Length: 159
Image 1 (cartoon, rainbow, N blue to C red):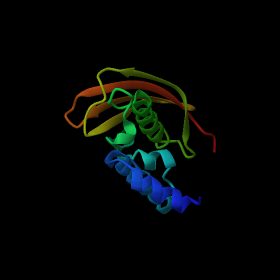
Image 2 (tube, rainbow, N blue to C red):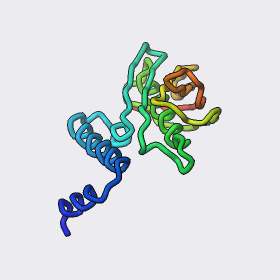
Image 3 (cartoon, rainbow, N blue to C red):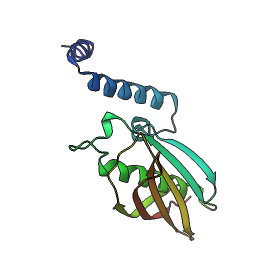
Image 4 (cartoon, helix red, strand yellow):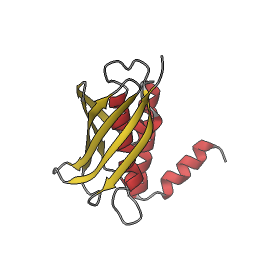
């Protein structure tokens, strides 16, 4: 059976929720193809990034069936991914950083269940050193409820 036959069979047998998930997968592949700066994970999770200033960034992740854990709330690992991506993206844009940054340490505190239509992470620079950037981030839902907070340290990649 080739991939087209498999896809058609899967679509015919799919629940509505599976069809929503498949549409998200297909749209993320198209978005990645059209934007080479976008990673597959950022595309799949539908991250939208707004650089507010050199010390502040917001990244939004809409809720979808792909995010649920076994009890129907956003999986903590995906909340941590949002935090890591937002903090790391901002660390890559701090003054004096020309190549990018990688995570050295990330500590996440999960405060309330991940429930909502969308999740907004606000990342802020705490300290921009010669090699390391110290960050803080908070994830809230669209109602402003605090879901998680994190601190992180990022290493500036040498030029």
